[in-house]
Amino acid sequence: MITDLTNLFYIRAERTVQALSTEEPLTNLSTYLLSIEEPIKMSSTNNLVLVIGGIGAQGRPVVKAFASDGKYTVRVLARSTTSPEALELSAIPGVAVIAGDSYDEPTLRKVFAGVSYAFINTNGFAIGEKGETYWGIRMYELAREAGVKHFIWAGLICSSKLGNFDPKYKCGHLDGKGRVSDFLASQPTEPMKWSILTSCLYVEGLNDLLRPRLGIAKEAGTLAFVAPLGKGDLPLIYLEDYGAYARWMLSTPEKSTGLDLYVATEDIPWDQLAEDFTEVTGKKAAYVDVTLDKYFSLGIFPDPEVVIGKSAVNANGTTLMTVRENFSGFWNAWKDNLSTRDYDLLDEILPTRVKSMKEWMIKTGYTGEYAQVLKNADRTHVVE
Image (cartoon, one colour):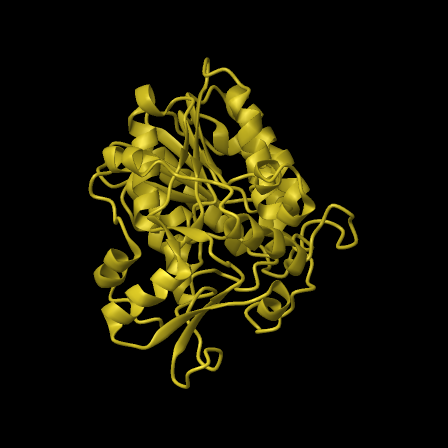
């Protein structure tokens, strides 16, 4: 019965998308969805999970982990139900992808209805730091209003706080999520339980923004892992394991309630990363430490002066940061090792996890070749 009702919502939303011109703003889609005369029936089950931010690289493994054994029914809110990623998820038994605006309160009230669990991954690159802080807190409030039993927040470190608010560590996409984590930590765990899954860089980014590049190392033909990292240790997380940690939080509330779990595969210095790469692939590689100015001149970001979140709010807003400003604080935070992870705890929670970059390279057949991970590589207006 529950699957039928969920599918009814999916079909109704799909028809709505087809009825609208793709040129119309998303706000019109939300208005249209919410003004349908015959209300959409929302399913209710003890095991219904709402996932916001489930279509992107970070969210898809979470959805798959939740739906892996049929114990949970998963509702994914997304801007489109027809993207390749949405179609991939909607083909999984027990998963329904619903069209709507994740940053629209009436839409959120609709999709929270009947939900027992929520996994929330807001997109600071789309909505900016201020928007992410607001919507993270507001989604928590709406979840409590709806009677959700367990709220899981996809967090990041608050680099400004960890760096004693030295402006060199200011990073909007870290601080926006980290501020919401601090808010959650101040909330009771009844009537709604909460957990925080604090992530870091994706290991898969080694195929994309973090990939090794030719023409930078001193020795011709040597691939360069280039970063303004100094002697810092960079934490990276294998996204399949990230999904497994999220599932553990959902399935083990007696251990995960009130927990802020910092996850990563390994904290690794980049000279070691280059050595591991050469050992696994046979390709010559070296770590090239660079200044921030040099880093932003390499074309890794097409335009470092682009404003993050400009697609959601006034691009001249004083709370917005450019790519250069944002990622300067980002790299400074990792360079100075502002955060740590408890790997003994991670091993206890997920004994099967990938435990090193070398293991990940072997497991995935990593070659250092480019493969798109992020929907928009300049990370200025990524849309989930």
